[in-house]
Amino acid sequence: MEPKTGYVQVVAPPGVTVFLDGDFKGKTTADFGGLIIEGVPAGTRKLKAVSSGLSPKETEMLVAPGAVVKWVVGGFVPRINVAESGDVRE
Image (cartoon, rainbow, N blue to C red; front, side, top):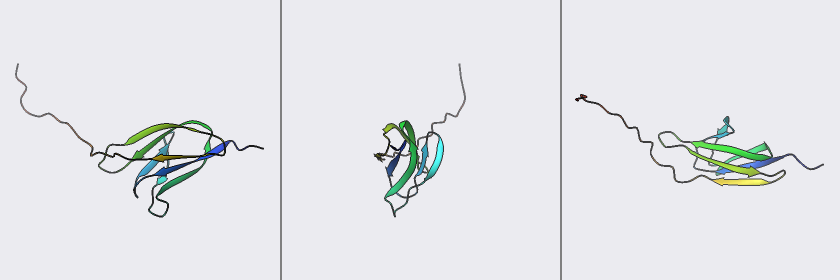
């Protein structure tokens, strides 16, 4: 019987929080150079990586049964908060 799930390997610095289809899956570690998610249902999956003070990264990828799909997360940039203050004059 052919497997109906696959694996996702997330390659990112330690401490990055990873979500799969909106569900928390864990944090990356130095031991694995990231995080390995097992038992991922085959099909198109949404991944999100979040690191404190940085803009989150998101991607979609196709997970095939029995396959390992790798996502190398890169290019985190500082989160920018824009706020306006002052008097409004017409």
